[in-house]
Amino acid sequence: MRAFRIFGISCILFAAGWPLRSSQEAPPQEPNSFTIKADVNLVLLDVSVRDAQGGFVSGLPKEAFTVFEDGRPQQITQFANNDIPVTVGLVVDNSGSMRPKKPEVITAALVFIQSSNPLDEMFVINFNDKVQRGLPPILPFTDDVNKLRDALTKTDPVGRTALYDATLAALHQLDMGRRDKKTLIVISDGGDNISTHSFHEVMNSVLESRSTIYTIGIFSEDDKDKNPDVLRKLAQVSGGVTFLPKKLDEIVPICRQIAKDIRTRYTIGYIPAGLEHRGIRHIRVTAASPTHQKLIARTRTSYAVPGVQPSESAERSK
Image (cartoon, rainbow, N blue to C red):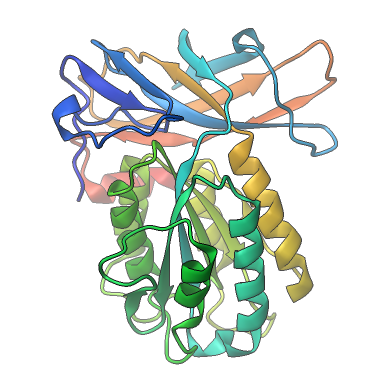
């Protein structure tokens, strides 16, 4: 389990869903990073806003938002709306059932890469029976489209599905990224039949992470291993979205939509009370504007204060 320090002074706190490590542990910052130096502990959220027609809404002021933690309104102390570079992991199912679908998956992943902020740093995790990094060992991240294309195509679709192991490996890799915001794109049928780690372990790590997870479920109706509920839970808790396309040609516009969502998210921070109490905190964010009839704000629904047991975290996240 990965531990996070939320108590301390003079911390560098990053724009994401979690109070972070002390400044001695923080990596060098990029020129366009959103970084806050403070003597308090913050919870920082990635928030996406859409209107009633599903369009992305940008340019809202801080006053348009209300944050609730465990049902209690919180005072927003930090706010930003910038296209900030992110660390992105592409987690791609390469089990045997994906063989006829792989060309479309690669095309869609490349569309996502090309639609993203050019300063994003990315990596690829391929998985079937084993979990394999797509990039060379000496290259943990890259913004080079050709290297990412090679990473996506290097693994043949064979064998079974270690989705949980792959997700945990990707969350660990995200922690090493230099960008303040962290995102995973998981492309799979949601099934798992060979991982050494459990779904409870995965959910506990998601609750403790600061990443947003988008999931794309690709499966046929007669796929015995499909499990869209797993994909929904990974996305819901982290503040991402689950997509379940009915046709393979829907994957490309989905990946383009995810890239736009990432680039238009708001960053909202608040100082929670009672952090001495361990456990799961539940979050809700609302948005309102006189120029929009209805706004829908989406962010992570929960986070874990260190000290809660892994099994408890996973159970409460359901």
